[in-house]
Image (cartoon, rainbow, N blue to C red; front, side, top):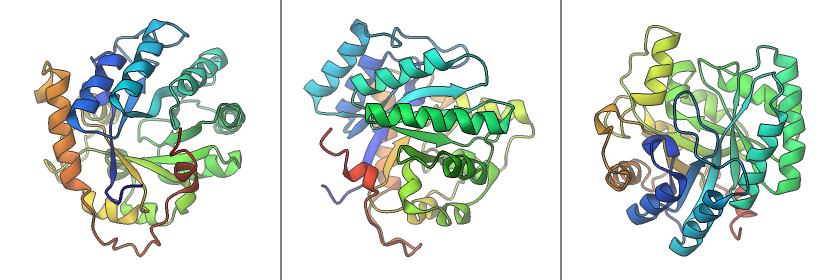
Length: 288
């Protein structure tokens, strides 16, 4: 196990890139991991990744050939509608790709049903050897870190963990909230940057998150403080769709993102006083 932080490229950083090509770009830039978007959001391209087809296996082959691992598969959305089949397909794709996590968003307006659904999906994830990383977002039905930890508590599953996105944390809480979270729930973090001022409304928050972030170090978010609050062994994923970079080659965006992320999470003494142990779910999955 290396002493340096492990770095990943989020698919949203170059969301117009096919999964196999994103693997190639991430490996070329020097990332240890890459994230794969199996289920599209909004008007993004839906790549043929929800079956056992050629693109899934090409993605796995490139990762194997280039020596890069799959960190997470996106995005499993809990909506309250009959989306169980799609959810299980996403979990199956994650298993084929040997991903560590499936990223989960909560969009069900009924909180009890949402928590029950997440708990059921955790049981399915356990059977497939992956974990469900729950993300809180101001514009979702799990808007704060506290809301997310309540869902994790309800699930009571070793497959239930939390992913902290620096932007969503800044818009809904603070680093102090992260310091109150048990280490075993902290899986990986998504880093980007942004102006200190929050968008004025719901629509603005969505636009900022999806298309108008900044690379780490180019804005005002307290990223060093967040890194210091997370346990050693945390994997850092750069999720930074930069509007000014639209149309750039995926390889170029990956290289810029890698340098910005590397410079942000260089080793340092943790001001949080955490023991710095590696979360068990990461340690157990290092040979996958």
